[in-house]
Image (tube, rainbow, N blue to C red):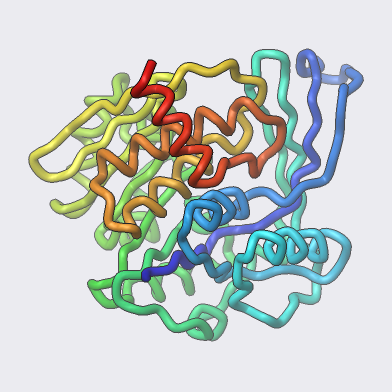
Length: 309
């Protein structure tokens, strides 16, 4: 059975719920606040809960936030690939959700922003495995070069999954250009795809992404409540979403990505994996917090109810 090796950043989210964000210089009271593992943890938890073994191939720190990160990963059964703790603590993200269920983030990168070639080589990668790369990693001077060099040296039998995230806004940076040629699976939301390609519609973005990526790439672009689009050679499909009452969109895209990769690793078609990912994302937005992906049984139940409706 393949495994997922996640090379991104596990950080700690300070999750707060407010009616609306304050104006510059203003202040509001939050209805709730809690510390929870987030960042790359959300994708890993989603994949692990849906039957795919996961290894965290990233750094974790010394301090209260590093302790919280390790505790959360251990609770999910995620293997921590790099055993040695960094000297500095794990980073922090303030994640604020307003009454519309939209979220805003302010992040500070800690120990997870560093990674060496020796770190990456400490965990064996086997044929059929999935290596998950986050666009956030390309912005970290302490890990980006080593990570891209390692990915480019991986054998062709290793599936490279790339999630650009909201901060990568162009395909033109040298490290980005190098990485694009090695991507097997692209997963992003529509806003990210439009921003990177300069397109105004999803179909245009898919057309333009093909120009940057390998011919046989599998692309999935999330479109919020509408579901997602998948594209692979000879096929472009819209996969409808599931109607739910959203309360918090934090982590929904991560749930989608983790469950989608888990489905592919288990031999599902891209269409079936996308349907399961849509169901997971829909259930995720009905819950507060970052790592709210459901398990496989809940995904099955929502799909069954939808078919029977």
